[in-house]
Image (cartoon, rainbow, N blue to C red):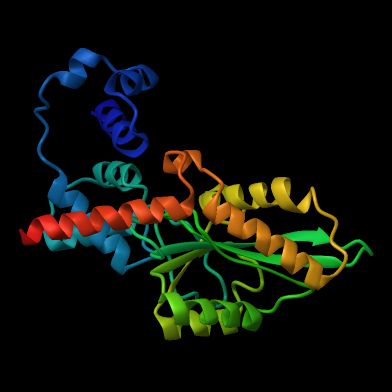
Length: 282
């Protein structure tokens, strides 16, 4: 049963074929296609998710106790297996100051434009050796670069002000994925996020690929802009980076978007939504 669950998880999570998943987990394909006689665990899994969401610091052992109190006749091993299968392990350590959001397991995928953003910093020097910090923010759904702002220094308040300017035009996102940098854990940014109803999705320390969208974008920014330009001043840096950002959004194709640019990807989905609305009316 454990291997069957592993195969099911691999097929659901990574969209691999059942044949490939069976091979990797050393599970018989004949056994996989044979109808399972196990009881349906859907209700139990849903209840485990609900308890984990409402009590962020509970592990599987405490969740098992809660289930037994509610009348579920289930042993701890099964709770542990389903708990791990749904990726409910804690993603953050407890910090002295509470953050507004504490996700468990894989973060939800964006399903529309400006729903979920990713944010990070990139560093680069000017011609005279002074260091610059570049704040980068992208849209996870369309891969659109929404903010690329170089400055000599940043504070949490400065980050919040830039986000407020963008949000006032485009609306508030559901969440912003960030690391544990001092600007992102500051009281100023936390207060702004609370006022705007935005969840700060903190990745686990030492796990940068949990924010893979922005890591990939920062790599493109460095390879295609920072490493091929000489920046003479802050104004010169802003001009060259903004020109690159516009080219990135309007002309650079992305393999993850079916070789469309972010602008084309947004336009195509807007057209589909319009056609679907018209067909529904007719």
